[in-house]
Amino acid sequence: EVQLLESGGGLVQPGGSLRLSCAASGFTFSSYVVGWVRQAPGKGLEWVSGITAGGGSKYYANSVKGRLTIARDNSKNTLFLQMNSLRAEDTAIYYCAKRIVTSGGAYDSWGQGTQVTVSS
Amino acid sequence: EVVMTQSPATLSVSPGERATLSCRASQSIGSTLAWYQQKPGQAPRLLINGASTRATGIPVRFSGSGSGTEFTLTISSLQSEDFAVYYCQQYSSWPLTFGQGTRLEIK
Image (cartoon, rainbow over all chains, first blue to last red; front, top):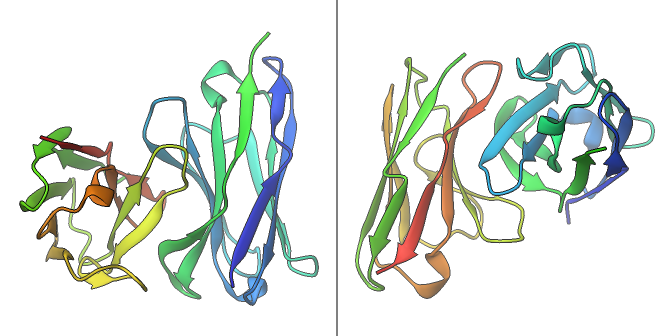
């Protein structure tokens, strides 16, 4: 059974930093494109970032480019999101998700999310 | 960036009736479209991949159609558990993008 478990969320002041983690199990993590999707309170889904299987290519939404950095450690089956220069508008539940096939496709498995709150 | 636009924002339908949700892409994306269902307090669930392929375990009352820029999700006979928010997403090109969602409510 595929499992994705996010951690690292919390309350941070504007301008601060957080590092989110997503521990994966139940599939060959190193073979899949994975990514992060967020949802602000009462709002829709917003794609944040994606990373290819080997970690060689990384992609970002314009709203986070230059402030958030995605990374993965395939030896530990873990996905990361380093969040710097945080703003109030980054407040959201952050989900990690796995693509349905190794080459891409939709997100077929999701974690339960971790809450990030940016407030003074 | 491909902009995804869903309509309507809210759809009121009675149980047992058919629901039709629309999604439009700002440029052609072929069949690289997914539909998700999200209920309050839950993570999204994949319904449809490749515009028309049901994901594992999804009931046959859910069907997807379309290609290029116009897509449709149809729920043939609404059950109580189908009232939720539905999102489309394109995965043709980076950045991936979602529509703003359609809330399906009980009439």
